[in-house]
Amino acid sequence: MELNEQLAQAMGTLLPGAVWLVVCDQKPLPDEYIVVTTVDERPEVYSGDQDEQLAGTYRAAWYSRAGTEGKAAKMRRAARDAGFLIESTPPAGYDSATGHYITYIEVSNTDTCEDYQIT
Image (tube, rainbow, N blue to C red; front, side):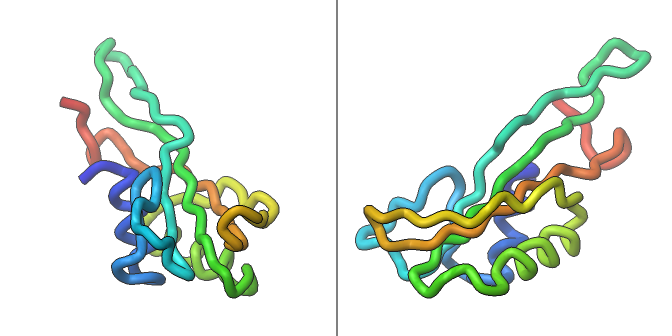
């Protein structure tokens, strides 16, 4: 399973059936949903001069018409439980076009060479 999919699975424990990769394409938009995107993903090379491990930063954004209260803490907890490291919790936002408040977290992976091999 790809790392962004692992984060999406973790976010799915918060909003089952309402998590998308890259963009929510449901019309009309649900009142609450989470979108997971890849911010940066790169192979790491070690002594064997091979891509041995994947490092990355991922963002989960919780869109809600009900506001942002408590959502960042829930997202951080779910991400930590799935083995991710919390990098940041940027300020919440508001999308005036859809009427959704947006709560973000950015996480990185904790893979080791034993956990993930690039094929």
